[in-house]
Length: 137
Image (cartoon, rainbow, N blue to C red; front, side):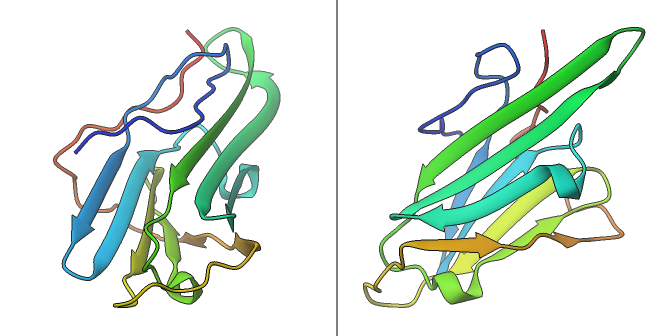
């Protein structure tokens, strides 16, 4: 299923990527392509019932020009997720996958949690939705 994010700003103020959200039995997952950003340039946190993903890199050379990029994505979290077990993984090919199990009942969502990214040495299996990185076009 393709979903637009609540807040989506590309390098020139345009929505520039497709996101995949999946709800499986007792599991919630979101995937996006962040291959233009290093793990150090990506931040993930939960705040007030939302998952917020931001990426920012300063000006650097890209195909005979200098480019800086940034994005912010916000997603409303289902009320019954276990946020203590939220698990972001960044694949070798730049695909960010964030999963959280459902707790079975409504849980109290804390004010803010900063979530570290786990970098994988392998690629993630392909999703049914093609993911595109934020672009500067």
